[in-house]
Image (cartoon, rainbow, N blue to C red; front, top):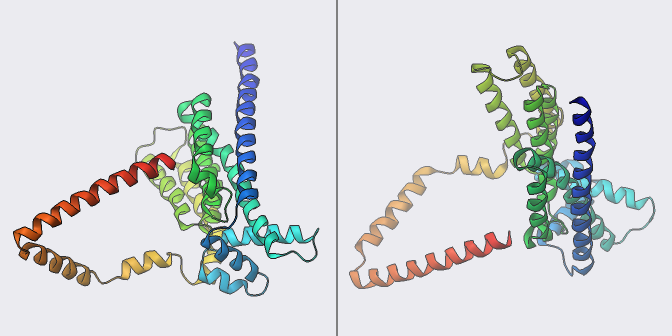
Length: 303
């Protein structure tokens, strides 16, 4: 029985290696092709490159104005390229940024594959990721100067360590989840969802422990999760002077009374229109709904 298990393990590792090599090779070829054939980068990409260029002269303003994780990745990569090219041009900045996005995409495929393997098996995970690689929008995002794939890399790595920690009873894995969540937060604040998943699971298990961790280990896991999160997040929050993203703060602080009164005024106006105009309004609204459904179907098909 032990011999059969011993033989099965290398076979599984070989299968995973083959699937990952195929996925990474296809993603690499497609990514390089899109980089070489790209005429322009996105408007957001220009902004990220400008942020990266300011890191050497005014890093504080970069950190305060926008999550600095992705521009910092570009900055470090450009420093490395500068070792071989003493006077890099603007085009080198663009290619460096695109290459780092592609690298993050390639690295993100690895944890995504293992997450899929845990839920649906290696074969289905392979086909799902192959579809993801070939879809137009994810492919374009992976070769442009955008932070979607860098964020997804940290999100997937943190989520994978969370699952492994739960599955194998290794409480210290949640410390890695916290550390990755904190680093990912500097790229996109949405990476904080890893903290939400972890705390929810820990609270449930503390109330009703039926897993392979005792209450003492669960408390240790919670403690090391918060420590791991605080290591990158505490200096970042101290420099910025806040943790909550600016857009979320603006949404929280927006006057609700104005929103309610505006909605109420619109409702009264619609009630008072005559029936003739009301029919045309309903027809127009119905047409807009049909167009919206068509656009949703198109966007889902591409993305």
